[in-house]
Amino acid sequence: MRKTTARLAVAAPLLLAALAGAARAEDDAQRSVLQTFYPPPVDGPALRLPESPTRLYIDAAYAASGDLSVLQYIAGKGTNFRFALGGVWRWRRFSFEAEIPFANITTLDVTEVSGGGVPNPEQQTGTAFGDVRLGAVWTERLAGEALVAGVGYRTRLATHTTRFDFYLPTNADTVSYVFPYYFHLEPTVVVGGALGRFTYAVNEGILAMIGPDGDILGMHVIVPTVIFWDSHVAVSYAPFDFLGASVELGTDVQIKQANDPQFPIDHLRSVWLAPALQAHFGDWRIDAIARIGLGRKSEQFGVLEYVGTSSYTLRVTLAFN
Image 1: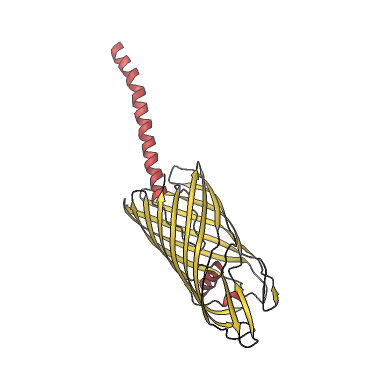
Image 2: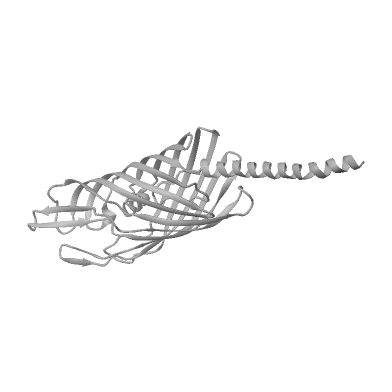
């Protein structure tokens, strides 16, 4: 009896340690699902993730807009190739993120400049630095990996150098046009998690787009602040360790109108879908993402966001944890 009791006394701590180790291993496996097979964010504006590994990535994207009239003083269409470097540093329950669009190659076909007629040349291509994004997300696990929630904040700095010069034969003048011209403030609530091989993410927040003012054709233009309710719902499924797919629905509804006859930026409601494929090669991940705008309002919002009506992105990511 004493020998049995002694054996139990020795075995019990070992058994408890084994169970604790198994629980930690299961938690690590669950954490890897959420941080590995997440739906890929795409600019439009981009989704904030409930949990992200520390990672670096490079993007190559193509976007197109068929109607630039929401820019008030020009009409026409445009395309853009965008190349960006980005990264996320995960520290405890925080994720700090940054993205630098180091090259925008933008082509405009301008059919009219307000007050100046048809410009010369009508088509121009310019290469420019883009708008830097900075942000942070804090989340906590509320029900293990199945439910994670918290808050995020991101800003977009008007660091762009995009500029076009048009000669107007009607008044023998040259007009410089610079866009985009908005500074972004983007607070949001973040919810998400993983259920087996499914992951999901939901964002509900505000997108505030703020001036600065500008000048064109000798006129001082006061740019109004516009505010949108920004919503994202995304799901992802990875049937294999090396392959997954996702889809995201993004909606932006204008809740503060411009109320300015110079700015037809009122009652905008943007809706878009972003189907994507993800391939995994160890710590490397490749995403192919299509962002498809639905309707004319989405086209107008895409011009304001400088992301186009529709876009196609190829992303290569290296994860570190």
